[in-house]
Image (cartoon, rainbow, N blue to C red):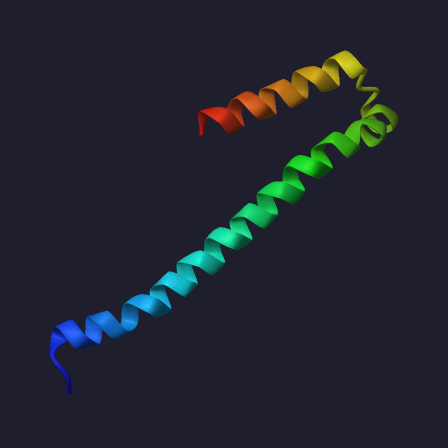
Length: 69
């Protein structure tokens, strides 16, 4: 067995790739979420009768919450 420093040093690159993959996946999901949100106007209007003003309020609520978090 190697010393604790050599064992820790060899596991760091694996952790970096795991973290990078998780962050990349999160960015991808975030991108699709933001892009698809603007496409829901037609569906929300047909289903719930949401006007463009109300949809603007919904987008504002989402964006303010997104910016806060």
